[in-house]
Every structure is written in C-alpha cells, then in structure tokens.
Amino acid sequence: MQFHILTGLPELFQGPLNESILEKARLKNIVEFYIHNIREYAMDKHKQIDDYPYGGGAGMILKPEPVFRCLDDINDKFGLDGVPVTLLTPAGKIFEQITANEFSLRQKMILLCGHYKGIDQRIIDRYVTEEISIGDFVLTGGELPAMCVIDAIVRLLPGAIGDFDSADTDSFQTGLLDYPHYTRPVVYENMRVPDVLLSGHHEKIKEWQLLQSLQVTKTKRPDLYHKYVNSE
Ligand code: ADE
Image (cartoon, rainbow, N blue to C red):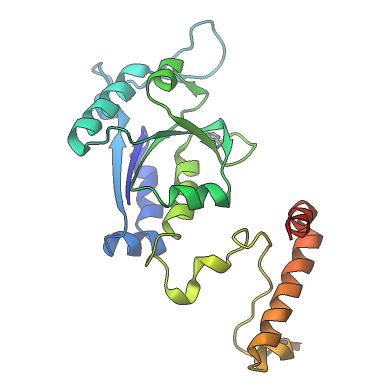
C-alpha cells in the first residue's frame, strides 16, 4: 500500500514511520511512505504556506497554491488520478476501526494534513474527497492524526504483524474491548495469573476471555456493550 502525505512539517513523520511495526512493514515492502513537503511548492521566496484569513479572525490559513501545485505534481509523478484525497480535520467523520478496515483495502491513499486554524476552502472544493477526524478535540495540525490513521491501517495489512499477534482479535474488531492479558511470571508480588489460563484447556480459556471481554466492556464502555448485546 502506498501512502502519500502532504504536510508542511515533514520532520514530524521521521520518528513514527521509522520505528517498530511501521518500519518493519516498510522494510518488508508491505507499505511505502512518500512525505511531500508542501513548502517546496510555495510560490514566494520565503516559502510561505499560510496567510491571514480574509474577513479577519485569529490564526493562519493554509494557502491554496502550494497544495494545488503539490497535488498536481505528485499526480503526474505517481499516477494518482482517481485516488481519494483524505483531509485530516476536526470537521471530518470520526475515524473508527471500521474505517481503518475499509482503508486497509485500498492500494493508495493521499493524506492531506490540515493546518492550524484551517485550510483555504478552494483546496477542499477542488481536491478533497473525504474528511477524517480522530476525535472531538482540536490539535495543532493534521500530522498527528495522519500518523494515527496510518498506524491503524498498516497493522491490518497482511504480514505487517506476525500471525501470533493477529489483528482479528483486537478490541473493536469483535465489537468488545479486549480481555485482560498476563505473561510470566505466574506469581508476581503475590498476584497470581488466573488458573484457567494455565490449564491448557482451550475451550475454557476462550469462554473465560469472552466473559472478561463482556465484563470489561460493560464497565468501561456501556455504549459499546449495549450495541454488542443488541446486535447478537
Ligand atoms: N486536526 C486538528 N485536530 C484534528 C482532529 N481531531 N482530527 C483530525 N485532524 C485534526
């Protein structure tokens, strides 16, 4: 899968994309990341990518020219015609596991990182095909949300995480939160791993895990619990 990320802050991506599962997926050629620096497409000698809003008000607005030029250029170079342009913005549709599942089936994604305060509406009108938010709170830009979205998608791609870690059993894939997990040692500071997990009895273990998932979800996320129970 190919990710094209348009940002004025390309350095921010260096850490997250070059560590752990995202890096491994890249080295295994499961995923390719292309970070496009919008600033390189700015028209003036100061390489300015934002400007004051018409009509007044606080904050700076991402200018249309650098983004138009960047999108046209990468479209030519990478043949991205028809690839959706996804804007990260607090005004977008809330990103959920089901959205990550859908996006993981795509071959290519273009992620446009929104900018402090906003982006010129003409960018949205001309290019943006979908708007995604990672929650009802406002961040300084779309970069961190883009990383969250990428991370959630890449771990679903076949081969990105070992079979052992299969993503099928994640919280939210099942509609329930995850059950408690334990590893060695069996006893630590007088706290013991539940006997059932040491029993080797797979059916009993599965039963225990489901019961725990139900209890955890009921306590922590009653909204999810009721959705799950009503869909049964
Ligand atoms: N940009 C700023 N806040 C955001 C959010 N919550 N989701 C996506 N993009 C954003």
